[in-house]
Length: 367
Ligand code: UD1
Ligand code: UDP
Image (cartoon, rainbow, N blue to C red; front, side, top):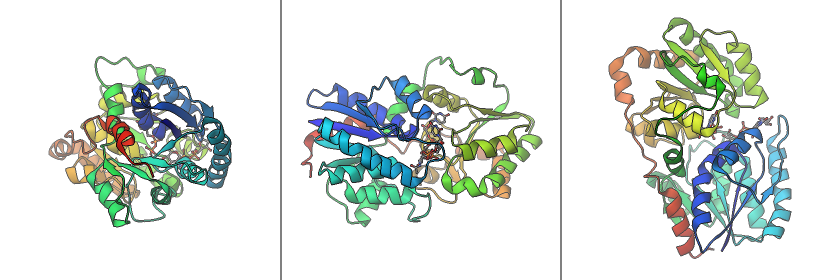
């Protein structure tokens, strides 16, 4: 069976990488890979580290690309790729615009599609934007659904999707099992200058719906640094120009704020393992940090990943200045509260999600 993975951004690549390894190791599968290049440097870093050599690269990225740019370039580009590679099954991941456009392109070519990380929902079509609608539309198109958790499968059931739904765990845990551990030596020169005697606040912010509210968030970071001299903030800043401009303008001269270049995924995961807490609007970090026992404050109004919130390691903090300062300082100053949150919980599986997905692909009656 010819199985084509299609992805385009950093998080998709990180979570598809362990699956690609399993697909390549399976004698009954001819594993093919196409990247859209929705991200460039941030994607290429992951491909390099996991030694993935795509069979096709649409190279669609442009500065400040719009959603329409990503969607139309992916749809058009994949037409030729499908004709050349002739896959029997396409696999997409998550909720980016690459995900939705690749699923749609596959449908247009009458090639069945499987969705990895299926069934996450906020039930607010505009938040996260455009990811909530991307994943709903992807679910409609796909014939195989690989859900990280039982809750995700229930979300699909509520939408009438019950055929070929598999609860597999999340491949992010498979990735962490590859990257974290041992006596890790960081590659990034930026990390070598971090003061690890301070309490490390690992920060990432990049979501489109946060662009308008970045000032609140960044003012809160600045206040926290000014009033807590035993902390150091490390932010590997996303390459999005909108994010970089705001980060440099608001925190460029803040005390102990290290705005650094994106880290390779091994450095990132091992830095997380050594941080005190994580402040983020990222999806992936909400899954990784709990597995590493690090409290997470989510800089959004809601999350499609309630599992670690229920387990107590993740708190949805919102995007208001007061709430971010209050919740961060609570964790910095109240040891009991910190200990309560800093426990390793892992609602996302045992690191064998990729194996289960491959088995399901081989066993399923592919529609
Ligand atoms: C995208 C996804 C989002 C995902 C995020 C992961 C969509 C609509 N959004 O958002 O769901 O959480 O990726 O990071 O699919 N850029 C570079 N080099 C890179 C990557 C980005 O220069 O390697 C710059 C480009 O100017 C690009 C901009 O960042 O136009 C934004 O990238 P884009 O993929 O459109 O949006 P993200 O915010 O990264
Ligand atoms: N990540 C990384 N280097 C960085 C920042 C993040 O490797 O400098 C990893 C992070 O550990 C996680 C993924 O990238 O696995 C998250 O990507 P991002 O926040 O861009 O997207 P999201 O998860 O929000 O879709």
